Image 1 (tube, one colour):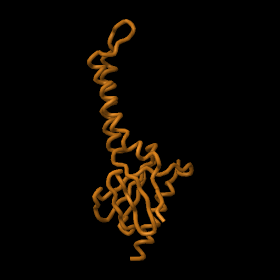
Image 2 (image 1 turned 135 degrees about the vertical axis):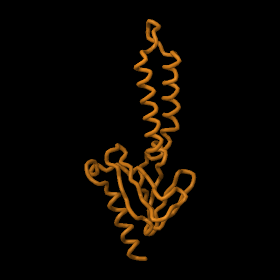
Image 3 (image 1 turned 90 degrees about the vertical axis):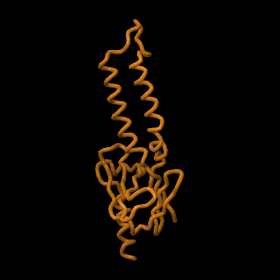
Image 4 (image 1 turned 180 degrees about the horizontal axis):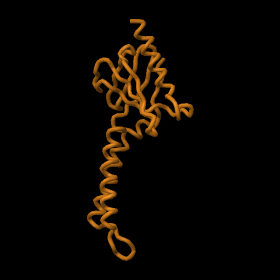
Length: 156
């Protein structure tokens, strides 16, 4: 039976950069074009403009590279399924070589490293469902995927 491992918020985070990058960019451009003024008609100080530009560039880079690559992930007895909301790939569980997670980011992205590349490459990144027990330790889905991959490898 197929079970979803990724969070219901995955779609929001995946498409977040498509809204955040242009909107924050327009606001930053507005600062440089002196569209925003205070009650006395003065434009923001140069330091504020450059600070917003740096925040926009850094935020755009990180949100694109961390969020846009997120997939929706599910598993059944023999396969891992990954979807980018347009296409889906199915990968035998025996193709999983390693599972890692980044505990330092608030979405705890989990990366599944594959032995062979798929349409999505040799790594599949997803945002797991929130588990309070995983706040300071390894997320249970990492252990589960490692176990499924090990079991599938033994069966082949």
